[in-house]
Structure formats: C-alpha cells, structure tokens
Amino acid sequence: MNKNFPFKDTDEKKQKYTIDEISELSGFSRRTIRYYIQNKLIDPPSGRGRGGFYSDSHLSGLQKIRALQGEKVNLESIRNILHGEKIPASKNFKTPVRDIRVRYEVIPGLEINISRKLEEEKSKKIRETIRFIKSIFKTTAGNQTR
Image (cartoon, rainbow, N blue to C red; front, side):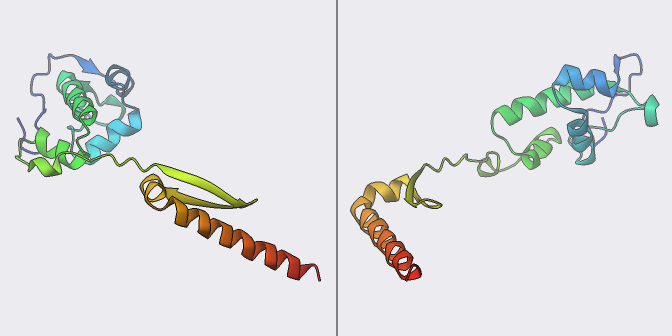
C-alpha cells in the first residue's frame, strides 16, 4: 500500500474498470473522479492515457467517500480519514446552517428580507420601519410629479 494513495492495487488480476464503468458503478461523474484523483482522495488509474484502468480498490475508495459525504464530512477530512490520519471531531463535519427569512414587499420592486428570529423579536419595530420607508417613497413620488 502506497502511503500517499492508500487504495493502491498491486494485484493485476483484480477487476479492471474504465472511467465510464467506475463512474457508473460509483455514481460519481467522470469529472468528479478526476477531481478526487487530483486532490489525492483516490489513486490515479493504473496504466497511461486511454489505456488507464481503475480497480476494485478505486471503487472501494469512492464508496467510502460517498458514505462519508452522507455523514456530512468535508473533503479535507475525508482525505485525512482515507490516509489514516486522526482528525479532531470538530473538523469532521460541516454544520448545515438553515437561515429562514421573512420577505416584506415595501413597494413594487423593493423588498426587505429579515431573519425569522429578528422578525419574531422585533415585529412591531419592523412594521414601523416599513411604514416609514413607504412614506418616504410616497413623499418622493409626490415631489417628482410637480
């Protein structure tokens, strides 16, 4: 096993796959597989050019990547895991942030988006602010027609 590429095959009798076959079996696009090779998440294919082929170890590595992604592990951490490095638990996961917003249309073409939390805490002030902004536009529109 190569230290830089933990899934390196040395047994030439194992199953050989083309890029299209490994793409179909793994569910990753050809471009994504090449990206993973470039970023050292999986080994480069054996052979050169169009004669290059992938093996069961490549497929296994791609399946591990897919499983870790399902657990929301970021690619840097996946690379470290695949190479056997220990990583702090705090760096394993990207915490998804869900930002719920409330949309207010002040006038046609002008909207204000406010976080749900702020809207719940300051709804009266928000309504007052919107009324004030509307009054500014009404005053401005009245001045332009004169």
